[in-house]
Structures are given as structure tokens and as C-alpha cells.
Length: 310
Image (tube, rainbow, N blue to C red; front, side, top):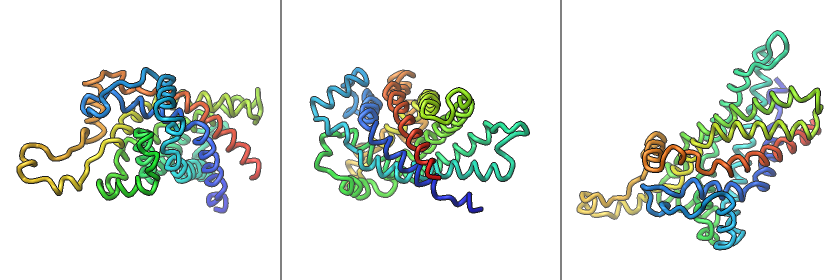
């Protein structure tokens, strides 16, 4: 049981996640901006301001300053300190438990894809649900960019809590958990699979880790982008309870009370496809993949190097 309670996968996973986040965060900001633009139901984001990742990067830098590309970095770091730590630690702990019970490997000694994916899915869903408030803070700060230059992490947290309640901090938790489960179910088993099969060619070296992580990132980007678009839009929308309490009965009857643009994941997906077409579910795919590649490369190389201290 001592191996199951090993703290090192948790700590190393968190440290590697934070390193990867710092290195790729500006790409994530362009992805978020692309995902929320063009919404027919939300007039504040109906305009198509950016033609793509490069255009978004250039315009944000020129109009709002390079600092705006890092709006939301601290909740993102806080997210990785919780989400990354729990996800990777739980994943490798579950794999150890499965190995001890003879569930992970078949008679030939090969890892079971389904058992591997199940461990990753469970680890991803649990960790993302716990870390959801930090994701909401990150998205809100990324969307508003320059407008949050004087609004710190604590103030942003307080505004969401006061005006939207505790539920506001867990807005979009459903698709967030689904996205994390999909990414983990694809990314971690694919990485382990590629790493194992490239071992004879490259050995347990950086070249192996680089190629394996890049292949894993493509699969996870294809599988998770539609869920990520829905998640980002749900997190960015808000209902101000303070205004609801102050609205007169007359205003309520005329439909002036604040409401959410989307009632849930399914409603968001349906409205997005209906108003913007199916391709809208893949808005931000290029920056998603471009970010996932370096993110995974930085993460897995850092993680593998930290494992040398085992």
C-alpha cells in the first residue's frame, strides 16, 4: 500500500503542469477569444473580431498590450496546481492499483487500453470538477483582457461570488468535467502507448517523450474542441442576482429580468450549431492543437525528468 500513497506523482504532475501553463498561456488566450466571438445570442460577443489565431495574437498585442495575453494567468496557475496535481497523481495511482490487482496488463504483459482509459477518464473528471472555479476565473479574465488589468484574482473571485453566488464559480462544470475526461482518456493512454512502442527506437529519452506527446495532443484536440467551445461560452455568461432582486414586478413581467443565454450544455450546442453552423464547434481548434502540442511536450518532458528523482 505504500506505493499507492506515493506523493511524488501528484507533486511532479502539478509542477510540470505549471511549467507547461506558463509556456503556452498566450495561445490559450487567443483560443478563448476565438471561441466566444460570433455568438448570435450574446450581442456583446456577436462581432467577429479575429480571423484566426495569428490575427488574434497580433490584435490583442497591439490594441491591449502584450500583458493582455497573460490576463488570467494566475487563476490558470492555481488551476494547474490543483487540477494538474490531482489528475496526474490520481491517474498514475489508479494505474498502480490496477496493476497490483492484475487488471492493467494482459497475459502477454501489454497494458489494457480500456483499463488505461478508465483510469484517465476518472482522474480527469474528478480533478476538473474540483478545480472548476479557477477555470471560470481564467476564462472571465481572458475574455476581458485589458479590462481586467486592475482587477486581480481576489477581486474577480469576489465579484463572481457576490453577484452570481457559489453556483457562478461552478458554471460550466458539466462540460468541463466531460472535456477533461475526454482529453485524459485520449491523451494519457495514447502517450503511454506511443512511448512504449517507441522505446526500442528512441529509448526512454527526450525524443521519445517529444514524439509521443505531440501525437497525443492531436487526438485530444480533435476529441475535445467542441466540448471546450461549449464550456468556454457557458463559463463566460453570467446572471447578476443583485439586479434580479432590484427589478420591479413590472419589469419582471415584461421579460426584463436578467437571464442566461444558454440553459445548459445541450442548449448551448444546439444554439451554436443552429446560429453559426457545425464548424462553430471547432472555433479555436488551431490554437487548441498548437497549444496542446507544446503544452504536452513541456509537461511530459518535465515530468519525465522529475521522475529521475524517484
